[in-house]
Length: 292
Ligand SMILES: Cc1ncc(COP(=O)(O)O)c(C=O)c1O
Image 1 (cartoon, rainbow, N blue to C red):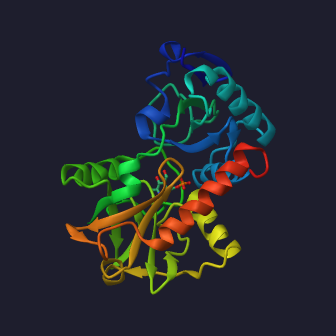
Image 2: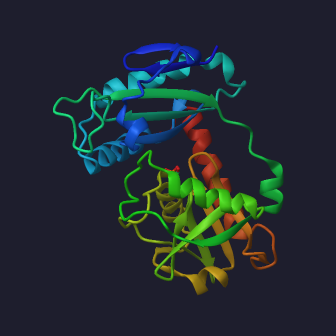
């Protein structure tokens, strides 16, 4: 049975209902997180909870739970859904906090806030061997989103429309261009490799500060891979030796075709292979309780 959490209770997903007056439903007035758990252990939980706090601060909404209450809730959720996860017990948690219900549809915040807190978990599928062998394709599109993309807001309509355009052109991702610079993708961060150096855009209000992105930079530092945080022009993107996209659900994926042209020789590159091995090592350490 698929068990979810809603406003203080665990219940079968079929029984979880939210009011039509919820501001998440009416305005997209809420934030979310996606947190992987390997072998039942939450991956980089303090980083995710800090980003959740930053997102809540960004929309001026109080945090309904303390760090230990979040931890307990998410661990219990994983336990409830243990039977649905495979032998390796890898699950991905989705959590969402909205500004709750109010009697009248009003843009102003309600005087009294009753948050809606929802969380669910799902098994993480095994990595697709075709992606590792061949990489994926991406297209570039204008970044039509708002100016506060550092907030992980549930209001994802621009991201949805951009991703749909990519899918309709047979691509796995849309890399978003703002003022001539590649910022990130519709649901992932971006890296390029240029002359052996790993480059990713610096954090800014127009980009989501990815937890996977930060870990990749930490691993580059730890293992002596040359890297820098720097703006990536559209031209630099198109002449990159390697392009990667990163996210908690996709991990590190090589982009081998961009706008219908091969990236280098059209195969996943050597720096990506090295980084993926370090990333997997880190995941294994989390699984065995030696990292978090
Ligand atoms: C727009 C956007 N950028 C980047 C990311 C990657 O973030 P993370 O590595 O924390 O999953 C996501 C993940 O959902 C995203 O939606």
